[in-house]
Image (cartoon, rainbow, N blue to C red):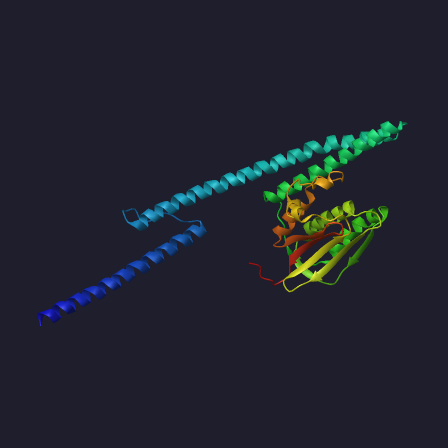
Length: 304
């Protein structure tokens, strides 16, 4: 009989311990959930000041949030400093470059020997290259630091493609290149201004590397999750080993040093496309040409 009583008491104690343990676990989980909620909302503060593990966790979380806040403040300060620096560089270089271009124009109007005229033309080209480099560096830096924010929304692709192609119609005619645009009505989620700039970078590259009597084709295709803008050319093509490197900042292929450019257009294009949740790819066969494709997310497509 006594054994039954002892066994019953032990069972009651065991059940009580289990219930207490579960209550303690649930209490800890609720407290952790409350701590995380407060941390997310930005109003976390320590409540327990004892020797418990929960109090220790609160203290560590409070220290982490304080360090994180200070780090965020430093990042914000650095971004402001970078923004000011970029603005200063842009402002300070604009006038000297404009003066260089003005003086070269004035020199070109003077009676010059063939050698002097070649020098003036070279100075003019370098001044234009410098201006382009500064503008692209400013845009790239502002995108990388978040100073410029893209605003993707659902828009028609056709107007963007038409504006970009129109900017290169005369250039392709001057170089005796056939420029063709194959379009279809389609929409995607993108920032029209910056996507147009990305597409212009691809067209600019295509015009540079496509020889006279070559062809450039701009085509829009639709898939289930993406809309694709492709720029196809009949240029020299890109070796497979270089295809990953061409999107790096300032990268110039060994065979491209005689061609105008600073090696940052494709880098900027990739930054723009990735900032909108899309991506860019290249397919190329040496001796036959290259195809650069901008893949833009379609409305309603879920990209992980």
